[in-house]
Every structure is written in C-alpha cells, then in structure tokens.
Image (cartoon, rainbow, N blue to C red):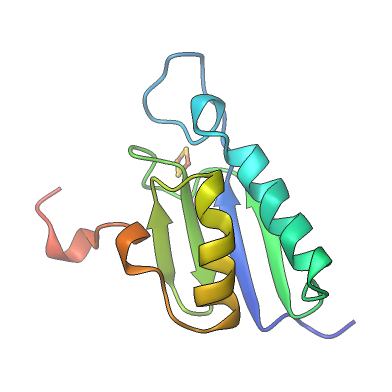
Length: 110
Ligand code: FES
C-alpha cells in the first residue's frame, strides 16, 4: 500500500468528566474523527489522505485539536459541521481553513 500524501490526526483524548483540558467528551472529537474517515472513504480518497484518531497532541485547552501533516497546520475549536470544509478546502484543495486555525504559540504570550 502506498503511503498517504496527507494525514490528519484528530485528538480524541479523554480525561475525567468536567476536565477543561480534554478533546474528548463534550467536544465530539471521536465523532469528528469518524466523520473524516467516512467522508474520505465515501470520496475514494482514503488511500491518499488518512484520518487518524490519536491521544493528546499537546495544546489541550480550546479543543478539539487536530494537525495536518506534512503541512504542520493545526486546527482547534472546530466541530462536526466543519469536517467537509477542512476536507475539501485543505486536505483536497491544499488551502487551510483560516477561520479554524489554532493560534500559533510562537506568536502569542501563552
Ligand atoms: S487533550 Fe487533545 S490536545 Fe491534549
């Protein structure tokens, strides 16, 4: 099997209920990950673009979080309704969805 051209890793890390630093639970991250997988398969793209659910990616607060590789483009605070746009615009079209990008930690004081 050929290596995929792009990968999107979606954090589905679960912490204790009510914990604010978690991508799981109330953020629907597992459903989002499944939606990416289903959309890619439905379009016949799942061999070129892979969606993978993963544990903590690091930023935690303001999730869910995802990163597209090899682009090193990070998304945060998105939802199920944004899956098609990220897939079409970025994963297929190569244009990141600006309004959903995670803040660049090198450009902030956090
Ligand atoms: S819990 Fe998702 S990035 Fe840390």
